Length: 96
Image (cartoon, rainbow, N blue to C red; front, side, top):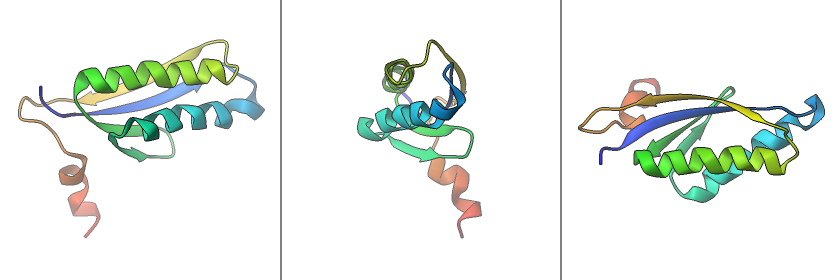
């Protein structure tokens, strides 16, 4: 299976003062997964096999629920090519 990029933004339904705590829990799930990832100000982008990344998305949403959210809305963006995609290749021109 080709390597894809998947960006995830979680929007936990939780009190404002606990929002960042819930989001941090989702990011910790991503960190612990071992996939390559980059945290941005509005979303986290991961690189890996689609089935692996979908599983991480589910676990990240569950982390928000464990943090006290009554629900989670998620915005997901994917970049797929049969030959694979790389965050490094996409970002190379910006990090010279």
